[in-house]
Each structure stands twice: as C-alpha cells, then as structure tokens.
Image 1 (cartoon, rainbow, N blue to C red):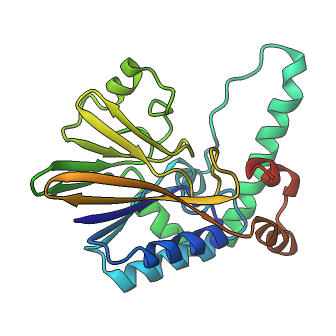
Image 2 (cartoon, rainbow, N blue to C red; image 1 turned 45 degrees about the vertical axis):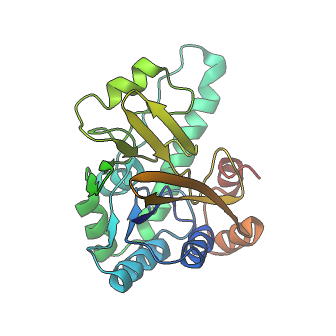
Length: 256
C-alpha cells in the first residue's frame, strides 16, 4: 500500500508541478491525497485548480481525493485570517498592513476564479478522508485538526496535551494534516501524526516544494518527507507580469 500526500499549494503552480513530477518519479501509488489550501495567496490560483482537476481525471476519484483548507474557505466566503487586535499603537501599522495585504491578494485571487473553480472549492470545505490499511489500521486526514481548518494545535512544538486534545474525538492510528506549513512526523499518544509540509509556501524549507511518501510493508509504515526544488524567482517574475498586487508581501511569505 502506497499513499502520496501533499497540500498547502497556495496558487504556486511551478512548485506544484515540481512536486507532481517527483511523485510520478517515485512510482505507482494506490492513493494520492491533497490536504487543502489550493488557490489563495499565490499568483496562479485558477491554474493550480485546473492542474489538480486534470490529475483527478487522470487517476480517478477513487484514487485521488481533495479536501479543503482555511484559505479555500476565505475565497468561498470572503472571510480572512483571524488576527488578535493590537493593544499598543506601535503594533497597529503592521497589523493594518497585514490585513490590507491579505485582502488585496485574496480579492485578486478571487478575480481569477471561474464558476467551476468556485464550485470545487465550495464542495471540498470541511471534508476529511479515511482509509483502513490492512494489517495496520485506520488512516485519517484533515487540513488543520479534525473539525477545525484554522487551529494550530498540531505543530512540531505543540505540547503533548494540546496535540492529544486535538485528536480526542477521532479513532484511528495515523493522522495526516497540513496547515502549519511545517513538515512533521511525530508520535502523539496512540497516534502517529504526519504533516507533509507545504507545496507552495513552506515555512521550514523556503524555496522547496514538500510532500510525503507513505508506504506500508507487512503492516509497518515507512514515511519519507520529501523536498523538491523549483525556480522561485521565475515564479515570482511570472506573477509580477500577471499583475500580482503585493509582490513584496509574497516574497516575504516565500522566504526570499
């Protein structure tokens, strides 16, 4: 049994293509799962959705599954990333600029999407995935934590108590998640939790596209957290030429 997982693409088509090429080089998979945040923030939201739909057509819906994330919800509902209001005037400028930048980028992303793109994002919100691996047990997947696409409770540095609480109302052995943009392979109570990192906006490996290869042999799981280089500067030049509204902001988010 072989499973490829990736997510947090964030409209970064060159990074997505690099990761998909690496997945193809890794051989055949029984399942391929995308864990959300397909389109928002990067420069090619519509193209990333089209590429994923083409992959789903190629592999079939029984083999390739897509769930939504918090930024997919932002595009569907008009919501924005929740922020704690500053208490000091010295913090206000950065707070204001972050809201303005995020709003400008999401509005620009939204302007690229067709009705079909919007329908896809609408249908994948709040979804979770589940599969039972013979001789091993149940695998579940979600964007951030079960029932909440925004929470940051499953990080490499989360306390054991916080992380355990996030999984309290689910049954299984392996939990797969995204959202934090930090690759992770961690034992949490009875769970093993794996985060493949981010395709398009890695926090741990800026400039690299991240995904994970999971393989079961006689009931034992072997996991590889993989990274793939892509031409970040070429991607940014392309987005600038397309009229991306906040180039300095996205460069900072991409760590370049």
